[in-house]
Image (tube, rainbow, N blue to C red):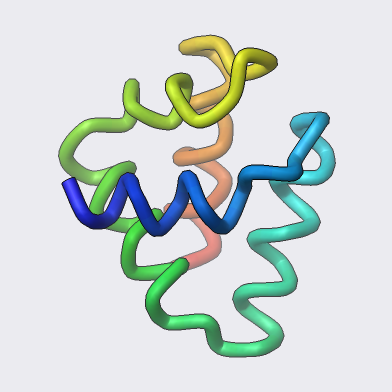
Length: 74
C-alpha cells in the first residue's frame, strides 16, 4: 500500500507517541498533503497498520493516532 510506505518513510525517526502527534501537527501547518492524505487513507481503511510503523506502536496507539487525526479533519 503506497499510503503506508509514505507514512513509514515520514515517521521513520519517531521514538514516542508524542512525537507522532507533533509530526502530524507539522504536516497540518505545512500542508503536507501526501502525508496527511496517506494518514487519512490508512486510518479510514486499515488503522491497525499504524501499529506496524514502529515497534513502539501498539494497536491502542494506532487507534488513538487515527482518532486524533480524524477529529482534527472536521
